[in-house]
Length: 447
Image 1: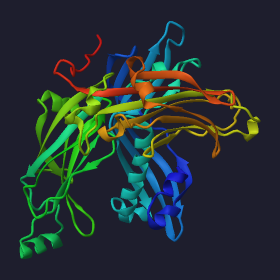
Image 2: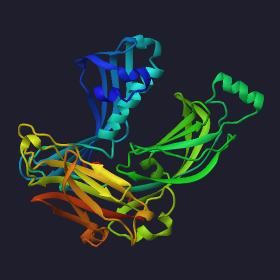
Image 3: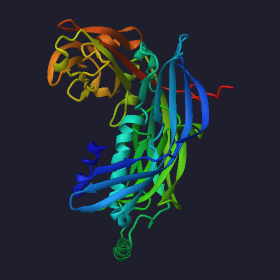
Image 4: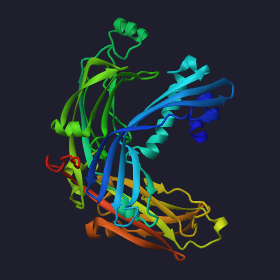
């Protein structure tokens, strides 16, 4: 928590906790839905609600003390229990995540009473939510082993596919986002907003359209692909008015992937501004493509262009064995690279009681979106390396063609990286195919 506060802007970066008590109000779980998964497991979807009566105190340089007297968190959880076994505890691991970013409310006390919903509240909530998204919002999951011998390759669930979203146009708004001063200037100059749309799918990285100047009926017709992990992930479209200073929100439209597909792939979303529904609308359409062990989409014209994906590569790192060296001198990690654009690193392991630092377990996954410019005859090799601190102690280059030609386009092995060490890893490559209505049918609740 202390490290996240350093991400705050200006003088808020010196904020630090002097007291943290979360109180005794329990978390409430409700509205549970149970379904089977295609990968030999059980999936639980349930609401999480917490209205914590906390006693949190913070201090900062050149600022009076402030505190938080209550915290509210509301969201929907996805809990994967897999693989199922016939040996107690019967479940290999539990993976927990929010399907969409949760709602977070902070009730400040002290000096923050003056600015509850301005600089402090907005900045702190933004940083906290960004940390939550990076750890526990799909596609990220917190994995807890229930069986010490659990195989991570059988635990990991592949994403469902990609959704290709086109933001078509918006209309029916004029003054919702404007301050009093801007409204007066608009009347004097007869200027209209300069609009762009920002699109998010669950916890995926946001995408922004181009800006359409001086219009209350912007038409974009622009397209972007997002990876889908759950059909309940929200599609959030925020229409903004670009300004020289800070941009103003015109309105927000929200739907889910499930609702979009049920509606035939096209919807007109009502825009909500500061909690109030407006007359504004934004029109979007989408197409869903599921992943297949087929590389034909890598060269297909439909999947070429800015913002379009032709496939996905998932790299799983289970463990490393045979690292040489004294325990107290080892802090190993695994680095995966693909060309110059993609580099990922696992958590750095340190020696601790109960840890075999010479044979560390990582159980981490990395996702590489595939665009048409990255594949083909000149596709670069993958490199898997083991590092001790900042020094590479061994590595192996895996040609792209080896993965492409592997059974089911999945290369899984204990790769010899030299010096007697081996990295157990899996590289799974997938292309995309347009899904039919039957193929995207949603799972039914188990009776």
